[in-house]
Image (cartoon, rainbow, N blue to C red):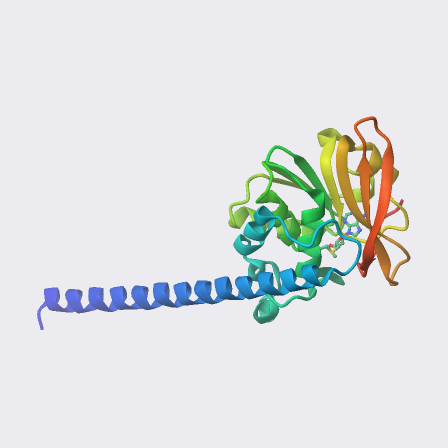
Length: 249
Ligand code: SAM
């Protein structure tokens, strides 16, 4: 057999392997896209069922688009990827969880963010919620208290190309003074009270969603609004179950 025939056969083999790899990856992506669509259908059914005292029976179209885009399977441990699009929270290590998709959807919807808004999340966890918010605004900020989770989320969000997210490791109870004020703040861990530094860092006209209540019991999701004059009002939305907001405060 001459050399050029061997080279040609080898080249064909490599091309075949490459095509098999590309088509397998494309099939997996299609399957995840279908699962994301099913997840959104389940969320919309929950929203229409009207649990709690939410402001609307519909999710904003932009929120739905963001949920349809963010690859939730990338944010869960590999052995749980099969369940990434089920409408339930999942463990992410260090005793923490990635929130239920329905909760992510309604909390995002309640903030009513616009493209130019500056948004702060407390409790980065896996990074999924801040990725959803980053689809909606130009600049998003998030704070995580557990260092390995913060580092892991940073690497993942960088790999996925989210370059409009700033992350830091620290106690989110105190907010992020140097980037304040924020148009919207979301707290994704349960506090015993609304953290005063976060109220201070909310812009007039701004909104905050925060679960408040005792540790390891059912808490109440609150919507906090600051009027243009700086008056603060709160409204109870629905019972929720979040891991506690930890830290020295
Ligand atoms: N938003 C996350 C996601 O999309 O995966 C899920 C958040 S998980 C329910 C709550 C997170 O808040 C945990 O990662 C926890 O370590 C973090 N946390 C708890 N207390 C905190 C604090 N004082 N400051 C910042 N993060 C805190």
